[in-house]
Image 1: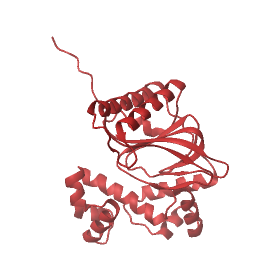
Image 2: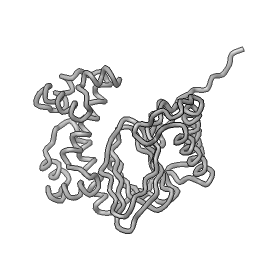
Image 3: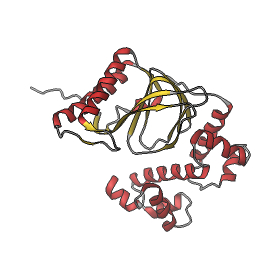
Image 4: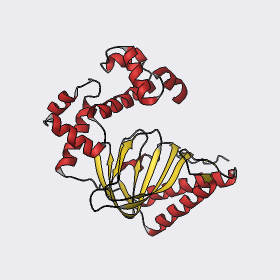
Length: 275
C-alpha cells in the first residue's frame, strides 16, 4: 500500500523574541532589517509602520508580518498610541510567504489563539533578551511553542486574506517613489543627488521625506538595499569579483568592506556560514 505524504512546506525553526511594547504618542523606532520573520499585532490603539516602500496604518485587531531582510520602522504620530504584541521567528518553506503581503485582521478566535501562543512562548523561554534563551530546559514545552505558532500562522493563512491598508498621502507617495527608484537602479551606485533627480525631488525634500518615513539617511538605506541584492547574487552562485563589477563598486576590496560593515561578515564568510 502506497501512503500519501502531504508536502510539509512550512516549519518554525526557532523563536527569537516575544514581548509587548507600549508605544506612546511620538514614539519612534528608527527601523531595522534582520534575516528572520517578525509579527506585530496591535492589541489596542494604532501606529504607523513603514515596510520597504509601503506605509501601513496598523489599528487594533490587525497584524502585519515583516519578511526576512525587509526594512521596517514603527512610529506613533500625534494622537496615536498602541499596545503591540511582537513575536519574531525563523521559518523554512514557501507556504509562509503570503503573510508578507499586507495587513491581516484577526477575528476573536485567532486573537485568542495568538494570546495563547504568546503565553506559551513566554512561559517556555526566557524572553527578557533577544534572542530568547532556554528557561526551564523543558524541550516538550519549547516544541509545543513552535507547534502552536505554526498552527496560528497556518490558521491565519487559511482563514484570512491580507488587505492593503496603505497610506496614500503625498509624503507616502514620494517615499514609495524613492524606494522604487533605488530598487530599479540597484546596480548603478547612484549618488543622493542622482536619486533626487530621478525622483523629481529637490535633494533637501528627498532627505526630509526619507528621514520621516525610514528614520535613516538616503545613502544609508540605498547601501542596505544594495547589500541585500549582493546576497541574492551570492546565492545564485556569482563570485565576489563578478558581483563587485556588476554592482559598480570601485573595487572588490571596497565591496567586501561595505558588505562586512552591513552584515558583520565578509562575502566569503557569509557564503560559508549563512548559505
